[in-house]
Amino acid sequence: MDNSQKITITVCGDGGCGKSSITLRLVRSQWTHEYDPTIEDSYSVTRTIDGITYSLHLTDTAGQEEYRGLWSASNLGADAFLLVYDITRGSSLQGLEYFNQMIEIERETRLEQGQVLPVCIVAGNKCDLQGMRQVGAKEGLEWAKTRGCGFMETSAREMVNIEETFALLVRRVRDMRRDHARGIQPTLPSAVARTQPLDPLPVSNEKAESVEPDTSAPDTPQEKPKKRSFWSQLRCW
Ligand SMILES: Nc1nc2c(ncn2[C@@H]2O[C@H](COP(=O)(O)OP(=O)(O)OP(=O)(O)O)[C@@H](O)[C@H]2O)c(=O)[nH]1
Ligand SMILES: [Mg+2]
Image (spheres, protein in one colour):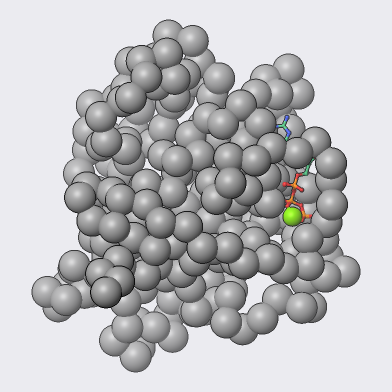
């Protein structure tokens, strides 16, 4: 019998920001330089987080404007949204506004219907390309925070913060479901899915840009580091 808990995730963002690369890194540990615009692809993967097995169903959506009309309504019904931008392209962060507005409407509809609210995590991808950075980590963090989203900088290429981003997302969905079951329903996006502050991770060799840890809504994966060298590269909120 399958006892895993199902979580549906819609991955969205502008064309070329790395949605497919992040998704493929999670589901297949696969990396490709080739750029092949996605129309829409779905994947399933299992992860055990804090002792619970989750079946993650990911939809890698189309970022290119010409394919966006194919965005299906079911994408909006997801438990969680991963909003991806490219730190080397400022317009890709602005592009997330389009998706966030759709999610806002969805959030209000679910609130009215007494359903569990969706979780949003923003991923500032391509953080390996430090020399080409256009969006500071602080700017990305602020964007995410003011919209009630969690935030991570990622590199699909260097495989930085990929598992951690999905672990953060799963924990937020778990907390959201638990609060909903207890009758605790957040009323404002900014009040959504806050987790308790944790001490910031020690950082020595940073791939992601440094930002003063924010004590109001930081999110740090709680799983024990497997490899010190890997964790020393991480910075997350
Ligand atoms: N340096 C670097 N390149 C990346 C990273 N992630 C993706 N890329 C590259 O960026 C390009 C676009 O990546 P995709 O994953 O196809 O982007 P996408 O968001 O799925 O694009 P659409 O399907 O068109 O919406 C590819 O050439 C990738 O190799 C990253 O973390 N670092
Ligand atoms: Mg794609």
